[in-house]
Image (cartoon, rainbow, N blue to C red):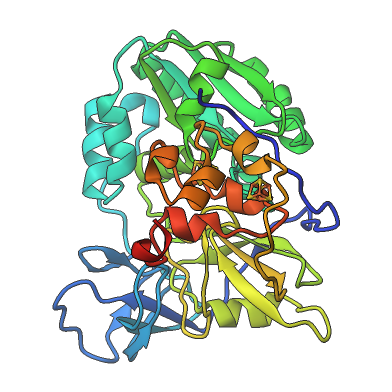
Length: 389
Ligand code: SF4
Ligand code: SF4
């Protein structure tokens, strides 16, 4: 019953073809995640671990603390680091080794030690002889992080993928790209000849709705399998081969409320408002809202004190529209589009949850509804359930 879906998009929203690199934020804000006592004026090197979970993306000086918001929490106390723009690195403790020389077991342990638990678990759970899939498809309209990352790091991605293929003795290894990602199709086609065991598969402009396993029946793959994103492969490369830390994120900043949609490589800990002031031009006389991490699965947020964290992927700046929920016109779109066979309209009308038992909260029914029914809030329980069900 699971299905991949295509979506209508506003093709007037176009991303700049070049990625912007924000190298010069004046201040960095990092949440204080334990009772750390660090004196002000403490000198910090780039990639220095300040507390168990916080690594500085710049070199500079600790100048105090401030309450900031993250995607998941409001008013979190953060260190404030003043950038000295010298990019003085913390010394590497381990000697460099090519990823091919590091055992799978060591890779898994090292990733876990560096707090990359999700990737470490994925590798740990996977069995030898599996199919490895590099899923290069971005999964939200107007977001292109994986596309830009693949363009920028295709060599590192293919090297690491090939090394994993060998370590898992993979039965097959596939790179999956959408048909409209022309740059990467050309890029991978040009390089893939060197990696004879890796195949390129080009898919229609489908959305997987954060359920990568939807790919498996579509590609006729049998278990076991390992699905990794280009960003995850790049993290493996950075930690294992470069012995460095990922202190930057790729962010798509787009939407119909701005003049210059683009993808920005930003340091973790930058204040979102500083980033937008420097690079983004809001359309004249336009009232906008800020939608963090996608129109389908993300949420509207106040960005006044919001900082960039590792989990932030996109900021969609949309024209504020005063929309009212209208009467259902019985078009059936919410039912047809649901990837797992739910009937959100019937659940809404009858107040009965049995019609949405398999809901994966992908947000598609709200996204598609011409009458602007806000199913997402109801299905994810943000509205008072007594009221609705
Ligand atoms: S959010 Fe809507 S479209 Fe998505 S799975 Fe749930 S009911 Fe189906
Ligand atoms: S998509 Fe909206 S208008 Fe169409 S049937 Fe569903 S609730 Fe009604």
